[in-house]
Length: 231
Ligand code: BTN
Image 1 (cartoon, rainbow, N blue to C red):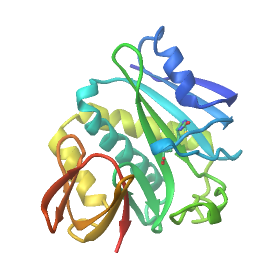
Image 2: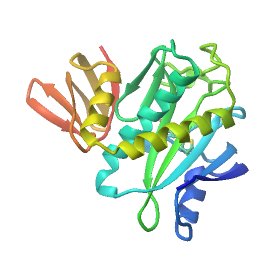
Image 3: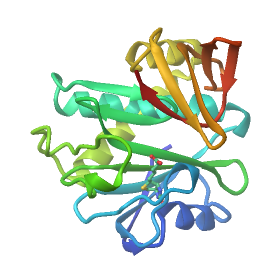
Image 4: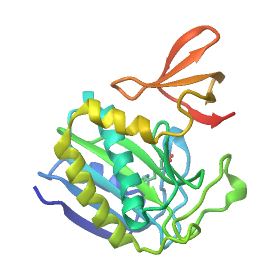
């Protein structure tokens, strides 16, 4: 099945358009926009949508019960796209679905449920510039900052090609293994910040639903939502 790609100059959020179109569409498709007026990130945050960066939503028929696998697949595909463009790039994953380049965030992902059997994977990649660094809690970067020259169309097409290969594999154990091999902070002390406070512990891995497994002073905890910080 080939990807249909719909280009927009401006949207509120590509995830909004994707949700709307998922009620009538068949197959798999992508909504891509040059800019978003209401780009959103995880946990109700704003995603600053500067011109020259990539904002898209991939709409994929996928069982919602397996959305943990889909997040892993898509995160790995972004990491592999960057590596394909620059084999020496220092790229890592950060739970739950960030991609780090030289220890700074270069891409984020927002998974939402579409209509019918569709899942919507909204992805932002800092291709040519970074939003105002002073407003953020964590370091950010762009491909351009790291000396990786590309453009939005090249990145998107390469990503879809790699994603197709990963979707075809669909072996959850292999995917989780690959995810673990590329994640930052495995078996190290981390801090997970949540709305109700922070939890410290050793990052042991993830379960099949991509929940984080943390060995804390109160025993093993499964974490579904939060932001990871490194000790
Ligand atoms: C995060 O890191 O918090 C997730 C960021 C997701 C941003 C992308 S940009 C394309 C799509 N449209 C949105 O409004 N959000 C996602």
